[in-house]
Length: 319
Image 1 (spheres, rainbow, N blue to C red):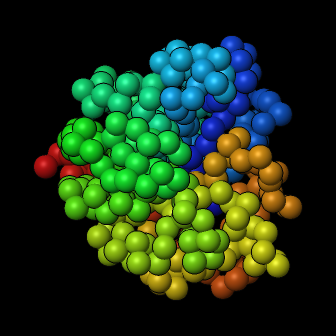
Image 2: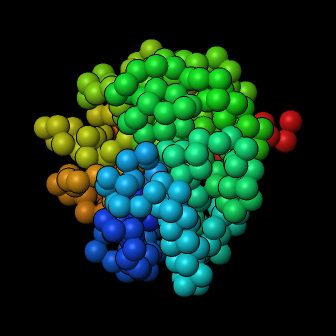
């Protein structure tokens, strides 16, 4: 069965720009993990495109975080214009569904790291207007908003203001890369669903980037989970038990309503055997079916759960 796919995280925009942040790769057809020609073979497709910035952009890419962010936005807008026969920016889950019904793919804009906007919550309203619907607070560094999984440390007052403003607008907060302390600080103040757009199970793969079972149980119990699958190579590589992360989360929450997809495609350096890019999502679906999940559950993981958490964010904003 060719399930529709919503992938809540990729770094394809950065890949299109290249190491010097000045290349002009094509989203329609390229050598990266994601392009539109391959994605169009799926039963429907919505991709969350991350605009990634850190304080280290000068070191990595020889441009400031602000310039990097501006170029990433410009690249996305250019590719939407060039390929408007295939894809368009979706500003709501309703538009994602409408695009799928007409055979069009959807792009959702997201922030990974906030250095490109100077960690300023007052800039979120402008980003909302151009289509940003998900934002993390940082990457692997400690910043004016929060500590990371590498540094430790919780939310600052500015971080709390950032979360509150994002949720006021209806923007989902992404807890990927955040510290455990920061996670719990967000859970103390959240008034809307949150997501972990590319985070796996710490029980299955012991890494501070991943979510532990206590965190996940609390997370799903509060209806605050949109996506709990970090890099699919983690889920594809252990002794032919490719779906370990998904199945572990299913054990904690048999409904499966708090699991979705976040491939981190074009952001991972090694691909798992059998997974070559966006065209390989059906292979994961088939593996889950073989492991005993029914079609309804797989359909929820691949599409409906992500739509649901986006709808909740919009509803909470409307309140």
